[in-house]
Amino acid sequence: MVMQAGQVCVSGVKSRGMSGSVRPVQGRDTGEVSAASIVLLPYTPSSVATARGRLATDLREAGTMAAAIGDAALVLSELLSNAIRHARPLPGCMVRVAWTVSGGSLRVSVSDGGGPTRPRAERPSVSALGGRGLAIVEHLSSSWGIRSSGGRITVWAVLPAPGAGALR
Image 1 (cartoon, rainbow, N blue to C red):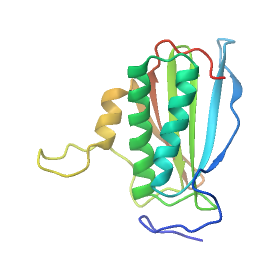
Image 2: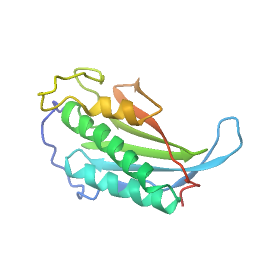
Image 3: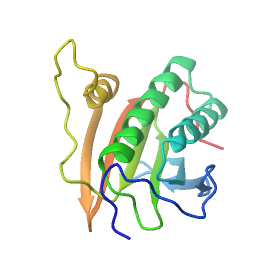
Image 4: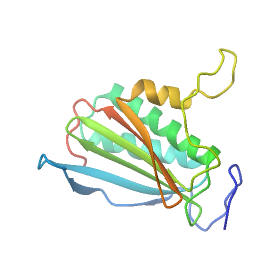
């Protein structure tokens, strides 16, 4: 099924989504082991709250400071909201959300089926009602970017995660 941005998907997936497991991830050159969570969620606005809740729980369990959890939840909300509003879903009417904690940093990413434009930070007027999401991501993150592969777009951001150990 080919969806246009803004269309509603109807599928047999419950609104809580499907969860991948938390799994150890070997660090690139450091030998450190971190943990990651991958969650497949329905392509619907209610998935934003589900993703935020899962991320916050994982970060709390890893010992992350409350302020960093709030920043991470906001960044994830912006990335996921943009995917649902401006892009097409992945096959099965889903969107993929992932996060990894390693070396005091948190990397969050959202993958979708791409859209008519590439995500970019805007500088809207003071009276504009929207367009600030990626500027917020840019402000709270140490870096962020976009990867595309095979019709899939992944927008990612790296944030400080003080106090974070490995996810359980």
